[in-house]
Image 1: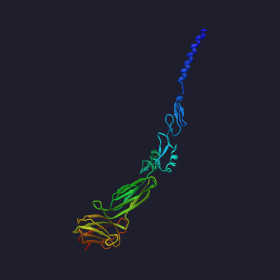
Image 2: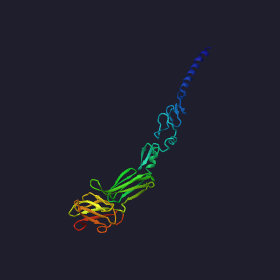
Image 3: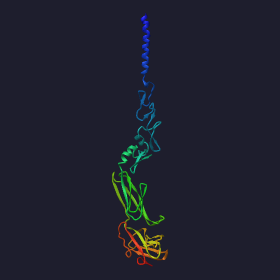
Image 4: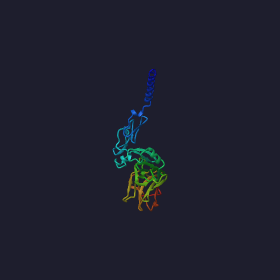
Length: 307
């Protein structure tokens, strides 16, 4: 009987130890719950695609906002994949992301070429080409390609960089100008429509003045200042420029004018419309009939007829 009494405390002690050990080994997932098809591993929810959070209660999907697909970091998104969102949100063309512009990646809120910046950079930096525009004229040229303005100095060039085979369209213009920036003669324009060449290549475009125009220089070494200036006198293309050409023997750049076989140029003496010096095609000068042609006229006591 004494042995039995001694055995009972021992059994109780062993059961207490086993109970304590069992409580130490309690499953951590017993107090965890996982929604939306998630499952618990060692007390942490392993969530399915597009769900996150402590209990897989948050949905990381896409919503269509203002015609664009945007990620959802909190709350519930309508689309589980970007493709599903795009197909139901503006036809698949209005997603945010990054575009490659002149070799650099820029964030855009719609019509993105690349979904991530990494994708853009991996393609954009090594996927560019360029077009060089060369100014062969006698005045600076203002040029615009894809809404990007640049100025090309005389005898110089500018380069535009873009995505291979993409459009490079715009315009260019030039004219003679006074020191205050007013136009002299005709304003000449180019309509530019090109495509960027294949990756790594450069296209060269020469901006030339056709032989239907000429550029005019005048050196006045006479006894009078000349003002105003008429070009193509009595023709439908007649122009009148209210400019002053000093009698200082300096060759002045004037402007562009239409070239005809009967072109006459007339400069009035000190604004007197009854006295002028004139030059006629075939008598005082001859057009070479080439692109970028020019003529240089001299007025002194021996050259240039006067009335």
